[in-house]
Image (cartoon, rainbow, N blue to C red; front, side, top):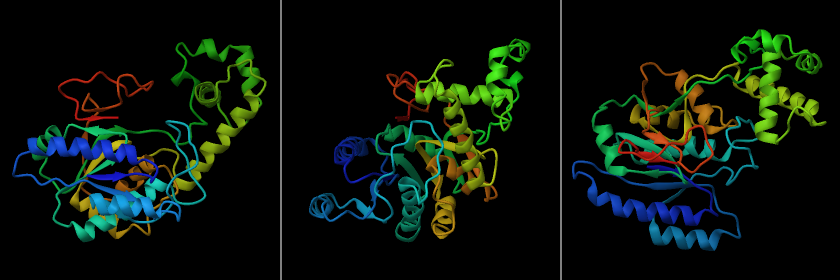
Length: 302
């Protein structure tokens, strides 16, 4: 289990350590499970505490890169001017695992605020038996939705087409179709708290257009290949080797979850396994599209 974590998140690491120690006794003796935390190099102020934690638990692997990223709104696909902290650690952590743990069949890439039902995960993996496994909550999304047709969002679409206020507003943005304009307005509402009466709405819409074009330009595509939600996913060792061997070559400035879709797109024979149907999900109290009640199917809870 590869957990990417920042140095300030000791409380999260302690919770995961306690959970792991409780769960390991419930796993079949035929299975070997190890959890490691992949970290940036500590700052001078963090060195003493980092050394103490490392010597106590012996489960910290320093692979470098940034410790944290600038604040980013939930569910926003982004590209930074330098490698993203988690993306960098996923790639270079894979390189470390490919070199130092080549015998491991699978790697669970886990967010440090996610929790596993470890026995259920191990049982599920026993059914897969492939080193080309890619298993997680599968997503496919548009990176550049500027040309979205209005009829995809509005049914019957004639109601929106005839809405003069909407038409007048959207005509300010020649780079946006009416559907794309509606998408931008919705994004400004969700992420920036602006409604159609906000005087800042035009500048917000223009900014959203600029952002999606920048992301699409970086990835070289208007849509992302299949990717997994960042709560966690599993790769077989063939994929881990591929990532490790190419850690210095693959794109690392974009959000980790979307980036992995582009990493996998280059590989033949990937076996995708969807965990969408209640296996991997957000906590039921989370305000999220992916929140579900915990059931007997739940394996990963974020």
